[in-house]
Image 1 (cartoon, one colour):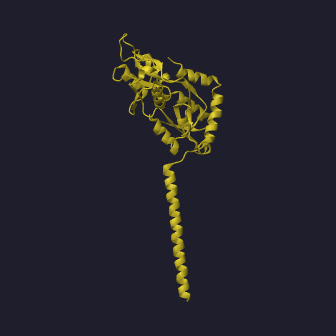
Image 2 (image 1 turned 135 degrees about the vertical axis):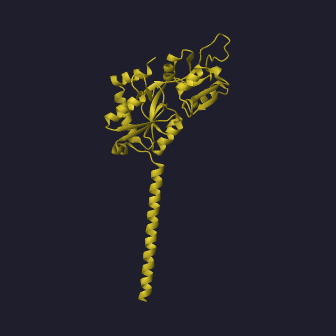
Image 3 (image 1 turned 90 degrees about the vertical axis):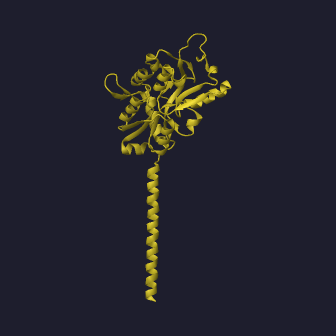
Amino acid sequence: MKRIRSQITLLRLVLLSITIAAVLFCIRQYQNLHQESGHPRDYQAIQAEGVLRVAAEYNSISYYIDKQDTVKVTGFDYELIHAFAKDKKLKVEIVPIMSFEERLEGLNSGKYDIVTFGLVSTSEFKDSLLLTSPIALNKQVLVQREKRGNNDSIYIESQLGLAQCTLWVIKDSPAILRIRNLSNEIGDTVFIHEEAQYGPEQLISRVAHGEIDYVVCDEAIALIAADSLPQIDIRTAISFTQFYSWGVSKHSPILLDSLNQWIEKMRQTKKYNDLYNKYYKKK
């Protein structure tokens, strides 16, 4: 009888050990899966690590390599985000990514804490992220070649002339939504070609050299390009002037609040005005 009881007790211990091992295995698997998939961080976690991760678009306004004097990384968003990080005693890791969709995916997975450049207050963006207080003013413009006489059939005089035209934009650009709305407004199709390989400056250069006819990009970028490419025309606006913001995850409300408080104070300073004029007012 005692032997039977001992066997039952041993069996129970074995089953308990198996159960515990199975539970621990499931917990580890869940932790590994959670770690691989990532999760957006809020301000406390960023402070704890001491590193702010940012996804930026590589262009001549936001983030680029300046080779004029010495080779260095610079840009409006680059300098502004570093100023924020310096005030908060954080290090910054910035990754240039041309595709907005990739930047958004990185934000939602926790790979990045902030996405910069070209974010406007639209219902589409509000459904997927939180936008900071405005940091700049800009608008989308049509880049085309200068008019060649009165019979130039390629030249677009106004937005109404965009019907049946193909506009080149950076892949996943926020301008795509505006172009689709514009197509509805003029009552005709406006075709969109999304470019994944080149940035806006390269597309503008292709317009100037006759390889493609039309590009839509930010006016500030187009103005810089026009300095060295006098054969392009950038006078046709595609959108109204809009406030541009940075974006954070919906799971990062404290980060958003910290950014907003800092941005509101920063915008009242001479430092901000000098920085803004340096990039958005140069012609």
